[in-house]
Length: 425
Image (tube, rainbow, N blue to C red; front, top):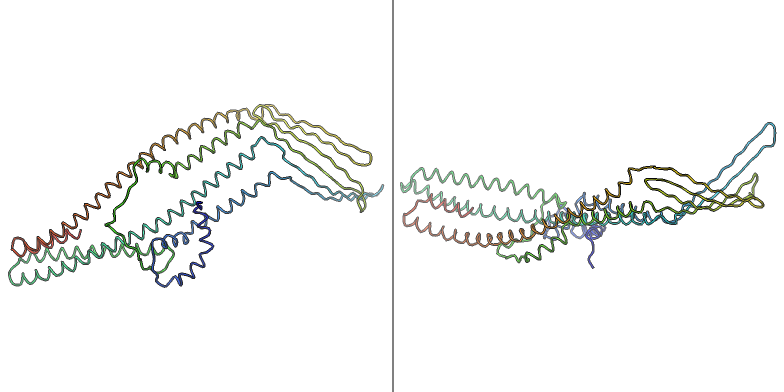
């Protein structure tokens, strides 16, 4: 059974104090893997915490909405004291309870609650995607740091070699075996290499700071993962990737929800003419002295019709006031042409539904083509990776050949340094 991501996030928030204890003091440096970085980023996200709290409140409000199906009670208490200069004083006390129960509304409340549930499900999906995106951003930042560190190591190693070549070139200049201009060119190359290293160090420092902030730590942890550039990638077939994209794409999911929402709205509008039926009951005690001995009761039924062309409310009520009195009441309120313009709402709902379906057809085709193109681009990137590894190996061989040519006197040492720079790139 698949557990929604937002429920996993909820459980993680509840267990986060225990996780903190397990890891120890956050100011102490720790080893960090891809999975741990993703978990820390999710647990440290204030936006995700707020979104989850908002989701929980919304779900709670939706559950309390079940109250609409149950009877509504109201209680009233009153005392009417009248003191008269001429006549008998009166002290009337009234206690009453009223009950109102919806019996039938054409399913409009049910469809409205179903629509709200769809909104909650969509919100949960968005929350799950939000958590996944935060985790993915942490992993991406992790990989970028590893990449930048690898590049920095290559540049620093190349700088050591270039510095050694510059030292040898300086000795050759002093012995008259090389020109002073070559030494100046070597100094320029060294200065450029040092500037590149300094820039990389600044960028890496900022990346590490942002990464530590993303995962909620004050000190940069020790990164234990390694990126294997020699590992090949297995890509899915284009048709399979297209089907997966059409099934799981968040944009398509939102449009499917929008279509379902428009269908529900059309049903609600189509059933707006169906009358509402409500039952009501009242019971009261009254009298001038305690205990109150006079009581009355009544039951009634209300039927409400509503349409663009007429609006009517019919109510009937019957009751008794023992020992002798009986009551009965019938009333009808009728209003012609309350809102004729609303008769167009059904046509508007149909047009909106047709538009959403048309948009869905267009977007699903675009997403399918995008998925196929993405697989093709990944295949090209995989070929570029293989070619880059081969090019790096050829560059190493070229540097060895250039060293041999230098020893044979075919090139100058500055040419060798330029070849080393190209190999570093």
